[in-house]
Length: 338
Ligand code: KG4
Ligand code: ZN
Image (cartoon, rainbow, N blue to C red; front, side, top):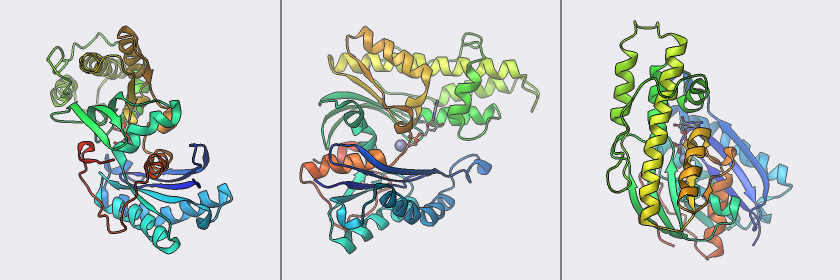
């Protein structure tokens, strides 16, 4: 098989990458849109326009970096859902346009499947494995059985875990996105200072809930005069919040590992970049006699390498999609086929 171009534009990362058939990265380019920081969250219309402005240039860049022309490629893979519709239209539209002009096969990539299959690219993992998908928009526990075959074991009943990090970051006055900044702040804090709730801990299954935890943090912040949260208290709140999330994750992961014993545990999505969470998940995996596989940090958040890889996995199985495939803002993994 010839190299595959991947395109990602489902949220606020604009990215393109080219991988060869074995998964070696021949070229990659990623632009994290900073223009949303002033609004404290992703503004869909601004995101779509930024994708439109930058994506064609990034695709040209990666082709140049790889020393390839479109005709040297074996296929075009573009994220087609789930995500913000404007960005999806831009990225999948560009991918389809290139496929149409060149006659190359097109793969409509599910962004969640791209996160889910990254561990096979980085660690050559065999099926099945257990996936903890933890990002800004998603928080679920999935049995990954094959390309296109996913069984949902549990998920959040309110906020995604990354969303909780971002909202607590906002409460603490941290720059957006809150996750990485909160992790840095927490290093100087006392994780035992505030006994925040551990929602659903000890309950059967592996569902998640974070809105109560976020409210508990808001209540503590509200005990300080507005705008006068002492630096040490902020660090202690950050550390205590992160500890509560880690405790919940461990409990939920342990339940999932009991539901699917003996298979590796994979952490994926932006929140999997969190060192504390990685360390605690590593402990729970070890305690269950399995290994934790977490992608390198640059492949945890949204990127096009994972999209090109998902394309390669599908093309290897002869799976392609018609150019008429419509972008899907909502596209649960369980609705995939392989
Ligand atoms: O996978 P991703 O890039 O985009 C989505 O598909 O949502 O994940 C972004 C999320 C954001 O909520 C961000 O705050 C969070 O991942 N995040 C972190 C860390 N790095 C990114 N959360 C906690 N700790 C981190 N180090
Ligand atoms: Zn993502």
